[in-house]
Image 1: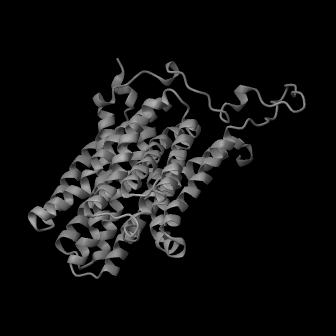
Image 2: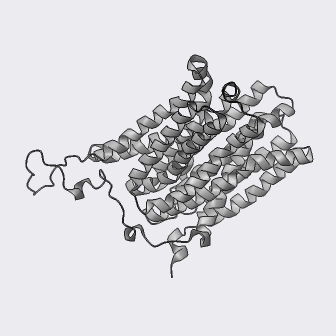
Image 3: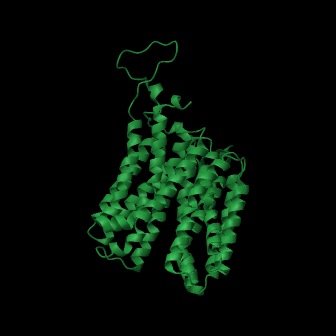
Length: 420
């Protein structure tokens, strides 16, 4: 019954969902305002290119090292620290006196977000082991909302109060997101179990009763055996599934408008098609984890989404100006493998430690792989003078995505890779 759900679980649920809402805001708020920002902080083409690479690079680097810290501090304390780092970076960069410091503080902000990416799956596994599918659906949907909203309202906010206000406004959302985690650390009264004597007035629950509310520092021995994930097929399967999904998504975010305008669409129509591509992430984020959580092996879902990718790409390559909405819609259904990959982090691990390790390796290496997507896609276009080469590159990455998904979708746990 809902009335029997502990207060701490409501706080953890709120914390996970609100934190997810902040994980992309510092990234997507910037591109619509680049031309405005450059009036105060000069940025050439190369600098803008570096700024575009920084989020995935920081996500990968900080995400990769986060699991090493999980052994020595609780997940709850680490998520608070990651949120604080994001707040500091977002606020500090709007006061940066030059472009270099703007980039440095952006890395600080992106680093906090990257750590948050890795910490959310093991937090779901720790506090909601029986509701992994539901909580994954909710927080990935929150990520999608947090990706779209900043890009949508950044220009109106900048027009009203300046680009500095627009960029720093999402730090306020992060400040709100940290509140549930702090409240969850406050000990709460509990009702004595039947047959036990109540404590004296004003007494608080013993430590065992408030274990959820006051996370303790894990000992290295309790964290589980050390695992060399570079030797794990499961870890590499997640890496290729997650990384190639992100690579394809970021490549289309960067180049879809250019593909369509070259085919004869006006910029407004091309922008609407990009919005359609992004919007399809919402229903996929909500639906895929709920469906896949009931499947022993969700690889058939992957095959369906790969088919959508292939059909959408073929349409964009061969007839981009005819039936554009259909090709974009099909391509937009393909990244449903992203929420599925996040769900599998918990469904292919037995322990909180395993979930943290797999999350860090898969997302860290995966985001590193995703960095090359937009860059190599553009270079192939420049070298070949057509869109055929770039799309052949994406088709090749879909093969890797499918191979990785085949491995990680098997009903085999990460810990089994290290069983003696």
